[in-house]
Image (cartoon, rainbow, N blue to C red; front, top):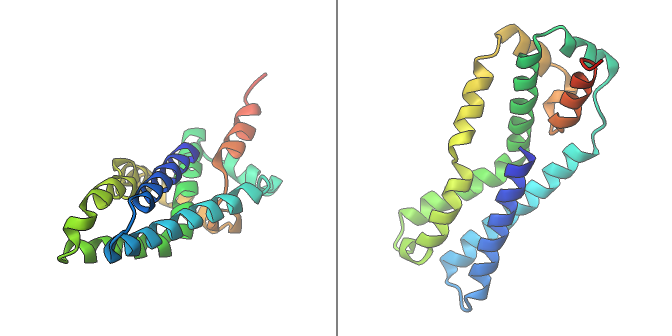
Length: 170
């Protein structure tokens, strides 16, 4: 997920820079560029929130150990992505609204290339695949783990997975 976030940030930055380098951008270009820049800032901010979090408490790790490892792994990966998305949601929503509005306007031709470049980053196949896998987890497990405050905001899944995996090694 960290690689995906970095790729999105890089692509959004390149798109924004390319638009700005084009000289006298239209109002439509400036409008969507602003939304892209705000999403970029949100991605960075949400990533910083996750990075600043320590590994969960011993009690939380013990609770994770009560579930099948593969289910825990899926939970951690998908929940981490979901909390990052929730953190970014106001800006994702605003960008989605802007895209829809511009697609329905006369200005669409001016920003068609930009929109075509941004949409796959926002609506990739992986997004639904992660959500689908998450909803296949046992409902009781999801409910129990979702109720833990640690998993209610952005967090890093990899350090937790490494911690749980290190216990399995001799």
